[in-house]
Length: 177
Image 1 (cartoon, rainbow, N blue to C red):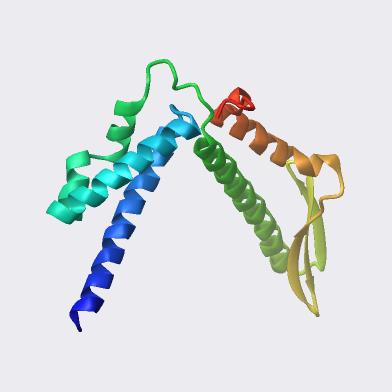
Image 2 (cartoon, helix red, strand yellow):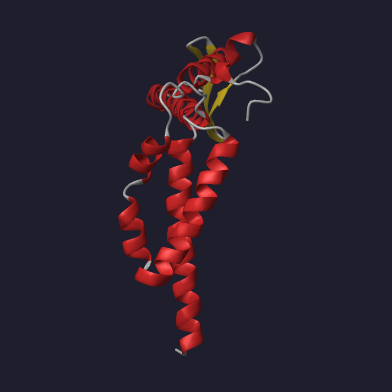
């Protein structure tokens, strides 16, 4: 390998580590600072990391800053922790969605297993109000959910409500960012 290739890989590695650190810092800053404040802080820290990494190396530069969570806490102003947390809202929504799908799939797969053991051709049931079906025919086997009623949207409404509560999304104010 020539020197130019090594420098290109090295500069990409430094960029990747720096941007990864700044991304995690931004996630922690989100709950306590406005977008304008976060951008200003991230711009300043990005410049400082670049200068420090050129002088001492990226490892020393990032180690001197500490963890992104600790650094974000040092920037947080008292009493401002009640801002909406989009990340927390997304985590709760996604977690509940995955839990719902897992439970619904497990229930329906259990129906299919019972159907295969009994030798019946099809079965229909309800999972928390949602119509589900399983079939075992000569053409194949399968499972299905029917979302033709309002009941099918109850899990979605629960997920949205959990995201709103967990992320404090009711605190969104237009023009405050």
